[in-house]
Image (cartoon, rainbow, N blue to C red; front, side, top):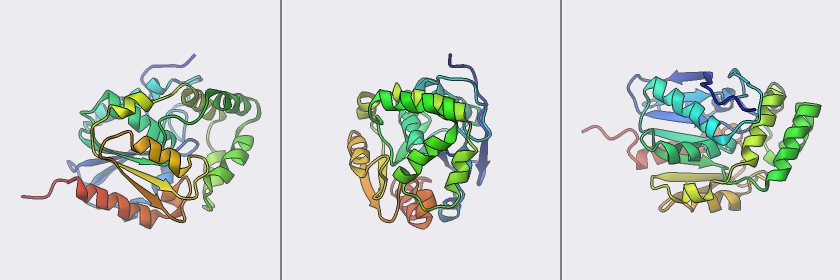
Length: 257
């Protein structure tokens, strides 16, 4: 049974106090270290929040199954505690799914979205239920053996990052993905949105990312070459340039008068 209580997420908040915030939510099986190569390529005038999601990294790992609503609420409570409003929410893969849910629930917290290799629904439920069962029975190695070729990332840090995650945390997160379909809620969003897809991603192919992003009227969609599911590891400079340009285009932060 999911523990839908207050989970104190491990996080790091950096940058000028009072500056507009950028909230970084990572992919399934990763932790806040995912964003380290990207941060030097982002504007120094903003405040950055990196988060270990429930069951990942240094955050608590209550036994599952998890519900997507609980994962969204974890981030919601953290932003409320930190007093962050009108944030730019950047979510990759699984983190992009949570970002969609938070934008639907609390638009006061979210000024704009960047969805990186993200979908409103990641396929059918049964394969995710099967992955959850396998993780609980066999640990992270079979999961990594399946995911790494699909993610298409040459980064040497990724296998170790996956290996240090909790099998139960990953399994319970797979349970949450299995039960989530955000097509209808996401289609109701009205906010600036940039979708980015790594052209080599086989886990969330670019066409699936594009389909999700175009649910939001006026959203932009861009492809990144030489990038898989985790472009912050594969092409951090190129991804940083896209994010910086998007921040400027939406006035985040607003130009000084």
